[in-house]
Length: 365
Image (cartoon, rainbow, N blue to C red):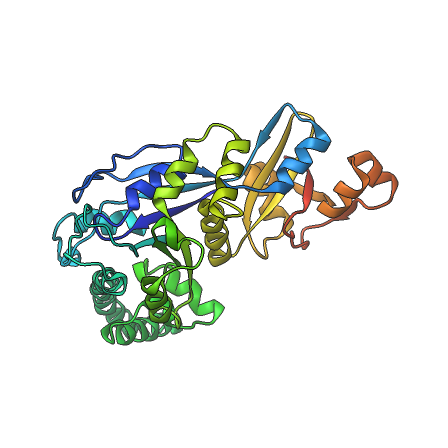
């Protein structure tokens, strides 16, 4: 199971440059608004040294990392919620994503035009927030009209849905995003059906110049202050640097470049970790001579549902899971040695898969 993130932001903040650097797809990056008119879909390999270590031990025929789908979405402008610019398309594309990577321009460059004619990342954030909130408010008000009619039946579910919609309407009318509303698990299941844009988790990606990549700058500090009460991540990334890293051919060349810049890893790694943390995702592995592979699951996933990520038949016919902890696999250096040491565990349907587990599923269909 992969997941999809949408890269959003005002025109000319570095979205397409970042997309090109991060993904295996290529989007046109040009110095004018709306150069990305159709959403571009790319794929990022999720970096995981554990997968590499398992491959070194098993020496499989193939290695398959987990992947993240990235959608580069056309730049948004004021009035998008009413269809201005490419607003309708932007909002439809963002609805299909599980998380939002909100790119904010935090650098000065007189050669790159800003659609608002000045650099102000907090203002830029608020423009997009407002447009998404207005669209959500429109959605909520339409659903409230329908929900009010359902109240006549006296259903408790209808009453709860109506109450939730009223809470969302109130918070949106205050100019706040829907994600700020804390809900119980049962209510969250109902709310997920509303499809609100501002409930999606956000990574604020501060696109800085090369000189600010290590310590940030005044623009970044303003962003951090502005989002301190949100359930969101703020990371520093330089799209220009990521572009340079992306064209280097070997790992050795990339490591030398990173070392010269004082960096321990590419910004892509930070971005993926931030998205994983926001979406509460984890990784488990399957390891055999044919393939060593990483699989993405949500935290708290039970063994049958984890098996279903591989194939629905695995979940339907689930019998048991054979589980090896990553540390044990590495310590004993082979599956056979793990078994001989008594470290292989047999787990049933109620087992909650943990990050890093090496799994083998027994099933019958």
